[in-house]
Amino acid sequence: MVKERTPAALALEKRRGEILAGRDPSRPCITVCAGTGCTAGGGLDLCTALKQAVSDQGAQDKVDVKITGCRGFCEQGPLVTVLPDKVFYTRVQPKDAAEIVQKTILEGQVVERLLYKDPVSGERCVHEDDVPFYREQMRVLLHDSGSIDPTSIDDYLAVGGYQALQKALFDMQPEEIIAEVKNAGLRGRGGAGFPTATKWELCRRAPGDPKYVICNADEGDPGAFQDRSLIEANPHSVLEGMIIGAYAIGASHGFIYIRHEYPLAVERIRLAIQAAREYGLLGENILGSGFRFDVDVQLGAGAFVCGEETALIASIEGRAGEPTARPPYPAQKGLFGQPTNINNVKTWATVTHIINKGADWYSQIGTENSKGTTIFSLVGKIKNTGLIEVPMGITLRTLIEEIGGGSATGKKLKAVQTGGPSGGCIPESLWHLPVDYDSLKEAGSIMGSGGMIVMDETTCMVDMARYFLEFSRFESCGKCTACREGVTRMYEILDYITRGYGQEGDIELLEEIGKSIKESALCGLGQTAPNPVLTTIRYFRDEYEAHIMDSRCPAGVCKELITYYIIPEKCNGCGLCLRMCSSNAISGEKKQPHEIDTELCIRCGICRDVCNFDAVMVE
Image (cartoon, rainbow, N blue to C red; front, side, top):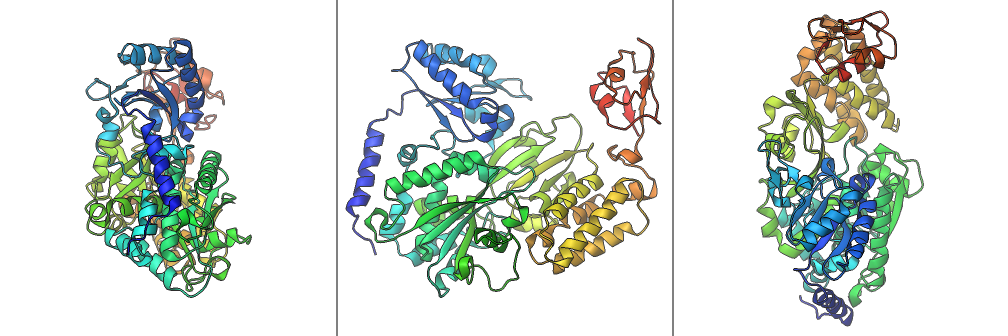
């Protein structure tokens, strides 16, 4: 049943019209990425320099300058895009500001040295859409990240912000909203991939009042930064999705649980909440609809286990962040004992697009059982690191070699870790697999929250498994024996193996303990902690056997199992390795081949890193 728009709703649309009427879409605008990566590289100073250059050159009536959220191509930051033509500049510094204003704005030319250079063709890419990094992406959640100011609610309104909320409040019943999300096939983007609408239905039907909704922004995976970046880039999209979800579920209050280590994201979501309240989009009577809902920000203390729903709830309540047995599920008995729905940042942001464009549109993207797009933080031994959004079903090879640009070191790529410390390592031979929940699970990994780490042949898979298990061991709350003792024991075995003390039967013991933990641990942290070990054994068993049987690390990583030496024929005696060696293990006359004393060598690898002639080898 369609409800008549209230004066408050009409006033919001009037405000949107005023914003659009006051803007000329053809007017140039210099946008500067102000995500965490580009900000750390001097993005805010660059923005100040550009504004000063505009003023100095008297171009105030010709161009605007503003910050935007993360554009994803973090490796090339700070990034600048000149709209509306999407002229794309990379690694821009404040000293480049005057030249950009003079040439691009006043003279209509590009600054060629600031354009991205395609490493394959050698050509300069003038427009953002020409850059290979963006070519295979499908940016739905990140579509507006490079054009709107994340601190401005007016910018969000100008691109259609809060129209989905109006549609939900005035044109749809709560049951219709849930049905739309169900028909869209949206699955939770926090890692487990549980159907979003099913959780909403359970919570709506559960007896109890008040009901709560929570945004889980406790992103603690090593190498993952997609949730943080989405909040930094477009906080209102997350907030709007939460309000719509709360209306569908019947919740009156919400919490955004976010790590205190993310100060920029915290600042921007708080600004968004304040602006939404001022516009009547949060509070007692949202847009005069009679629906009341408000949101608070709850800072987490950096405990990885608080990404688990019940541990997160305990943390908000002021208790130790430890998981509890389920059932009852949070949808039945959650925060303060009331029905509670928890979704990930990306899940909430997706809701807005589904309501705006419809379930049919969304369900056409992706695969049969994994609909829509998802965001990954792509890092590791590849040329193009950063934040990407791709349709479900894209192959790992396309993602890594085309978007990621392939190996950054020139060495053969070996494996990719998906799903963070809880995920598995998938070998290069399986990169034909589509990226979806079912395919990754079958390969022994998980989608996770979206972290993806690419490794090359210099990565020791045994050491990699040890690293991730050390993380899980440290982050375990210690409540259940399976995780507390089992993960610790697995870590100890791996540590012994990497130090040359591995024994016959260790591989089988690791498999046995890992399977036991997966079956008996209390929460998702423990149940998935063995994944890196089990998948590296499954696909890289020969490396385990080399460590144990031959006391050898094939990748040349594990210090106790390797020896550095210098090839005399390649060494010209430049002395660089000698000067850099902190243990005085290298000797030799100038312009004569040098030698490494294996007794003094601490196997730090600095000699190999600094050698310009590939004379230092490891075996």
